[in-house]
Length: 381
Image (cartoon, rainbow, N blue to C red):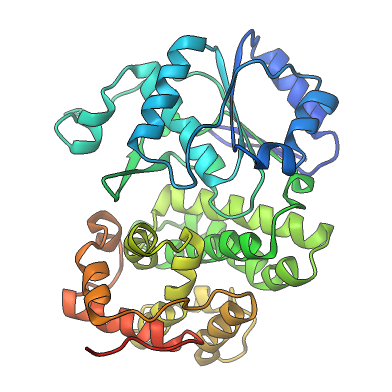
């Protein structure tokens, strides 16, 4: 099934996806492709065979030398390779970090904007600017980030998370082939799935939400709550396909609304304590939802996205879901850890939250989140 949006064309489903890819490459008149992939996942996911055998593409120029949470040095290496290859198309195949890296290489490599100046904030356009990047084809092999359909990418510099954003960064073409997600481990499935679910929830109540973004967010929440546990514990074709679609719709939602408090607090948890991003947001979501429910922020529309009967059951449902799929607190957070996380909250994302929280409020919420996790709460020392 092909869907056309304003800024991209999307192929849903494994059927004929290789034929569709060959057709798109032909339509774009591509001569030289830069493949941005994971180091090991490219082969383990079946993506290499999909491209070489089924789509009959030659993989001559491939960049995969970057870490799971790409940093500034990774980007500079990618840009050096980009200038060496001088491609006319970028094909990104992998998880969220891979897709983010491909979009960053396309953005900075094509525009020649100085990455350091952009990230450090001393280079910014005074007014929104238009640009044309290279055609970008995105093929996700995980189901979570939604990066295949967003206009921003995450990059770390000195352990600080930065978000690079421009509408031109949205890939022109997306291929959602759930068969490429079948080799995901249960833990990776859990982490990426929680990212998609949290994106859907945060998008729904975000200050920047619109009617359109809430439609997308609702699709993501319904699919994730119905199929995430099954995809982790007893994965089958239906659950894999549903979670890949949940991730896509969550991406469409946050591309409009952006995320809020779970993501605002999660980056420091990832950077300082090594939790994968989806695990970090999953730790926070039950307590954050409970907090917003008590504040009267949770609307009937959002409640209806959950099949929980009484709305008061939703925090417990989320807590049980995270425990069931292994999203638990793996360490005892000290008060100094809580204070560090709160002090490094992402200002842009927290500003998009419908409730304003002080540093003390954030610490209290973090303590509550860790206490709700099926492990030891923070030690008050």
